Image (cartoon, rainbow, N blue to C red; front, side):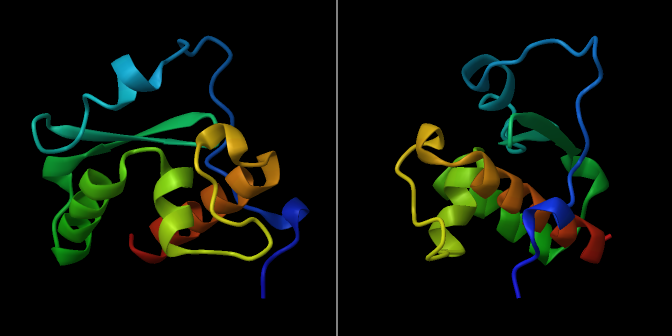
Amino acid sequence: PRPQPHAFKSFGAAAADAPLMSYEKDVYPFNGRDTPNLRLAVNGKVLEIFVKNVEGTLFKNSLNFYKQFGQRVEMALSRIMYDPKYGCPESVEECTREQSAYIEHNLYHNSEVNT
C-alpha cells in the first residue's frame, strides 16, 4: 500500500547557504557517462552520485535508464511507475507537490534497499 504523505521519506532540505542550481547548467551536463558523476533532479533537489564509487549491473542499468528518460526523476519514474492517483505528467510543472514527494520517497527507499 501507498504510504500517507506525512510518512514519505526525503533526502532532506538543502542547506540554507546552498547555491541555486538550474537543470540545464547544473544537472543535465553531469550524466555519469561523460563526467565522473551523475546528477539527478527530484522534488526541487539535486542529488549527486559519483559513478566510479558505484558498481554493479543495477547501477549500469540505472545509467541507461536516465540516459533514455532524462535526469528529472519525476519524469523518468512516472513513466515506469504509473500511478492512477497521479497520472503521467508531460512536464515537471504538471507534477503535484505530493507526486514529487512520493517519487522522492520511492527513490529514497530504493537507495536504502540497494546500499
